[in-house]
Length: 209
Image (cartoon, rainbow, N blue to C red):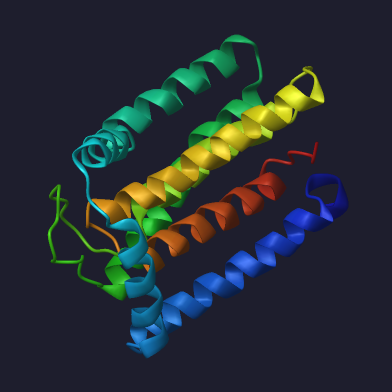
């Protein structure tokens, strides 16, 4: 049953994420003023440069490039298979893969150019939605689902979840800070990742914790 796989809170977040994603996609396609206002407001808050922040965000965002994140996924799948958690292992492997494919397809469809002002690192391709934000949500979000099922004290569990959520948020901030994504790209990436994970719970029959 649906109620066995996701909570009411997650269902509400799923609907919200879907609506936000559709609104952002529509706004960008129509070149809506509210998208530009939203982007510029967040950019002004985040892009306050300092050498220490620049070094940190450069290193942090590179960790979520294709090769490093593939290593994380492969190692995670190997560990899950070693302990015979095959269904969760396939979930951890396929959800980031499928999400990335969907992300690339939407990028090609929307065809939004990356910001051109003061890029601290160079990335090719299109801007919307942010692939790094989506993959961080897909991979770390999948880990959150696993953490929820660990036989550990509740306070430790919530501490780990809070750290993982903060790590996801930092990815989005890093993409804006180094100047390769608009905030609307990042928010859309978060939403897309959450949507794919939630759908994946149904497909792989992963019950809510």
